[in-house]
View (spheres, rainbow, N blue to C red):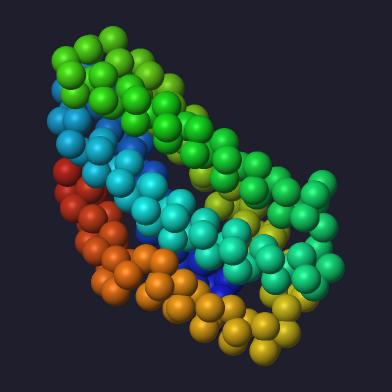
Length: 184
């Protein structure tokens, strides 16, 4: 398995949680109450698995290697991906603030949750499509077999040192739990 295949597999797990977030948002739009804890768990998944783990591997390992192999960091596809990571973080921050207000009983916070969840889901779906179908193909066409092996080792080291043992698996289980909560 190549490093980009590992990242694509992570995308499939992230997409499952995007589906959950979409379903939860639809429930709010239909006037149903959703326990704030479900949104908080989804935000935890996004912050740790999608951003810290997945985006961390991309930003600290894959993108750095691609720049070393001649890809521009500014003005090219890597710059677009980094900008979208930042936009995603902004949606998450705003969604978390709205969820906190919602938890405190402010029913008007639903609009903030809906707006930011929709923005995040739409951004990430497009982002994942671009990475899977453009950026990773570019990487696969440029990186050597040794580069791919080295990246895989770096990903494993990143998960051990930066994330901790068992964290990756814990978030796979959380994705399943969230799907059950949203009845997907």
